[in-house]
Amino acid sequence: MGGQGLVEQLKIHLALWLQSMRLAKYLAHAGVASRRAAERLIAEGRVSVDGETVLDPARAVDEENRVVVDSRVVSGPETRVVYAVHKPVGVLSTARDTHGRPTVVQLVAEERRLYPVGRLDADSSGLILLTNDGELANRLTHPRYGVPKTYRARVARGPVGERALQALRTGVQLDDGPTVPARVRRVSGDLLELTIGEGRNHQVRRMCEAVGHPVLGLERVRLGPVRLGTLAPGAHRRLGEAEIEQLRAAAGGEGRDRPDSRGGRRGGGRTGGHVGGRDGRSGDAL
Ligand code: URA
Image 1 (cartoon, rainbow, N blue to C red):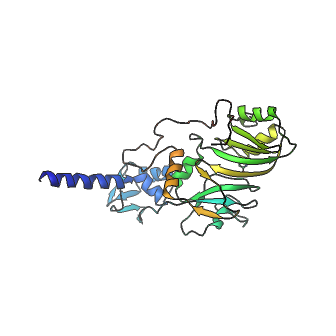
Image 2: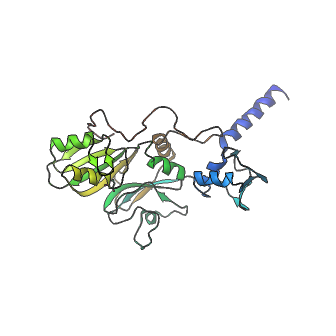
Image 3: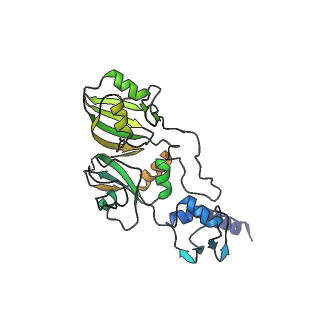
């Protein structure tokens, strides 16, 4: 083979390598199971590639391979989509409700199966993301990455004083432990903007309650790089590729999965839920 032919071959190999992904991730993207459950299916010998049982979850596969799970052929991964939705008060942020109440998923007409990224209380409103990318959803909600979420809270017993603000910034004691420092800004006497990296149940409501200002109304205005902006309640917009990449970067920074990738965080960055400067004080959140 001449030099030119070799270069062409290498280019083809490189292109195929870039298009391939780990078997476990391939199954997760195809909607067969979560990444963990896919790894178990593989370990149990229930997955074959081109007729051969594969026990290695890191085996590189692409759309040319015939992947079979329990004699069912798995079709290639779906296009990944992410929607930003303005959840109105009263709508649930679950995929399905056993009592037939309205859910955020019903707000978007999309044939792909979408899942909410994290939760907002039924009586909270604002930005929630929906996606069919389970891996991205897991990362965005995993405490390890502490993806910042910004809320606007209308509180009772205003105006909120400096002591309460400072307590929120440094951390307040909740029944499941102290909160890590948050960014907190008083927009007006009874309106606060809080940015937290944690995502515990009813966290903002409990934080405000703990400093003597129960929440009257709560809206999420930002999640990582995505803002609620001017989306009307009940409306949605599909994120573009650039925004999805920014989200991926915020949630651990991994782009495409390569055959040798470990699925962990690359580079430095946050490891906890801490946001903000040393005293959690900041002007505009993020
Ligand atoms: N914190 C809360 O208390 N409620 C929400 O819905 C979101 C964050």
